[in-house]
Length: 211
Image (cartoon, rainbow, N blue to C red; front, side, top):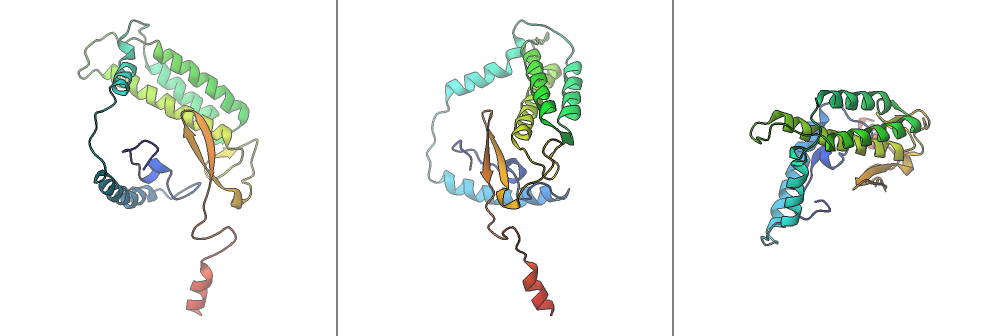
């Protein structure tokens, strides 16, 4: 379950279990196993709750946010925004990152967000409006990109696919932590080593069996 009652997450949407990196096919197994766990948790949860009316204010706010481009504004081609987002994330938040580049990326993402907020969709029809869909997708991509930048700036070490040129060391394994972002606030949650502690191995038992 998540901090929002009734919302459940599974697989890599909840952070995954593979640490700093994983094999390419493990995501499917992750979602399958933990999807089943989430399903059981949801079935148990729903038995103990009663139906309630939805939060109308929250729904209205979500609809208003999605329909922002139908207000009067500047009509332009969205493709340059997409290309700029790709360029920023590739050049400044790619395989090798540093603090200065991440700070610059955050400023450029804020500028892209403002550009999207000022955008106007000329076709007012909501049915199969691909330009509107593109706008919604770009809003989500900019939001996710912003979360990536914040997390990368907060993590001053290098692990897995995250490499900080200004902080190349991975640091002690015992201090490993998950990066968590809630409403733009970053926090680090220590990793609980429940199976194998740093410096230990599971191979001793295997070696004894083989011997």
